[in-house]
Length: 407
Image (tube, rainbow, N blue to C red; front, top):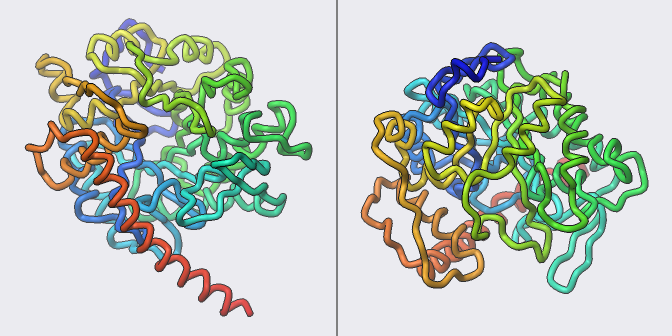
């Protein structure tokens, strides 16, 4: 690992698998919702990742990509399996890895947080709140998860992507198993942290075994759920230590959860990067390269984090939406992106505004940066509704066909 004394934000980073990132700035995973509603990439989505590659990112991570269409986070997610449009995925891989960038797929499974209009949410344990319901997964269903992730990773490698990121953060399935808020199981996958992390470890091992040795396998992990009763930093450090030696090329540290009733981490009034202290503690228990995602709005913050040696790379999401050429902008010394301010913030408004702004970038619409936030929410919800109808038609037909063939 490069020492802090000769490391800067624009120095290359060699990962354990031998792949070289050209700098330390990574476009972290966001749900861009630009799939076609049938699980396949669109021309607009290809254009978006092409723009980020041209803008100088070392790598972009596409979130989320499902291996099982029954548990999506949104109807704009991609689905990569044996019935996907492989030509479209290959085009996405090629265009998103231009200019020396790498393009990785974030492997997802929303579990208990699966989008209800198009799924039947299932997680580690049953949850029944007035406005939230999730069934418990069976042991057979749990044991099928590692191979599902591994199969998706194998397809990704075959289609030209540079890597995958196993998503174990923000309250999605693997994060649910880690968190006592979601996981009340009493079998081998529940209880103390060594059991709650079992599914994540098995999944990472299966993914690593399924792909070539120079294919990047990253993991996104919560430092904390940031909610009473959730995953603690102490337990998260135990997970970090357990991942050592499992073939992980980059550990992406984040935090927060979408557990019912939790405040949206994306809409909290905070300043400065998050989770750097946790990264510092993680250094003591692992040799894996570390990345922190969250709160980087200024070049000086990102530079300081890398120069200090606390992290090897910084993950940035919304800064890339405001300036798709952010690494080039920073390297040229041309200042920081200007983040929008809104007099009122409707529920989900910030997520909707930035998601619709990604659609603008994908269609080269530069003139809509001042979109009203209420309008953004309406556009966002309308698009989800339209794609939900497409999703249900596409995947209900597949399930019916599968059932008939097995009868």
